[in-house]
Image (cartoon, rainbow, N blue to C red; front, side, top):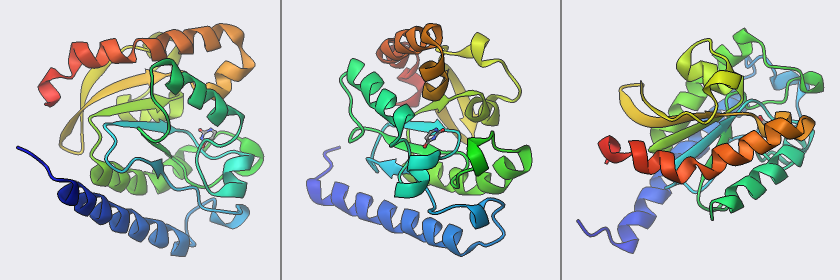
Length: 206
Ligand code: URA
């Protein structure tokens, strides 16, 4: 089937409206547990027709200031990692499980993750990625249940989530890589394997 430029633009427009609607709902939802202590909502950002969606943990200081995910030091590393496999932020969609910054950059609490999850679920349904890459254990555990990122990182698998199949790859969080050079090397190796993992596992998703 040939999809015209006009049709693609129409799909993109529908997705943008749907995402804007969720962002508005989140802004108005004063019951969201971290809404009172933050500067900005940090909603997902990137290519609305991306095949690959990266899901991080929660915004940090710069993300909170700018309202855009992964724009601080961890984001700079994410950009470099994407470049390793010939991609840029324009090719992918990047979001977080929790869309407000936890005070002092602490880990999000289980009840905070649960409160923001319905919005992430809607985001995934709208973007319709084929590949989900979880950055860090919190994002990984949301899809796989309790696991160890040190054991699971870099291993792709097909998962079913909200009735859809995805190629799912957990990775170390870029912020962890900034603190530990061994993790950084591992994360680089895992990124370089992404094209191979896609080749190995993506067939059933087509
Ligand atoms: N860490 C995350 O998990 N998300 C961001 O957006 C920035 C840092």
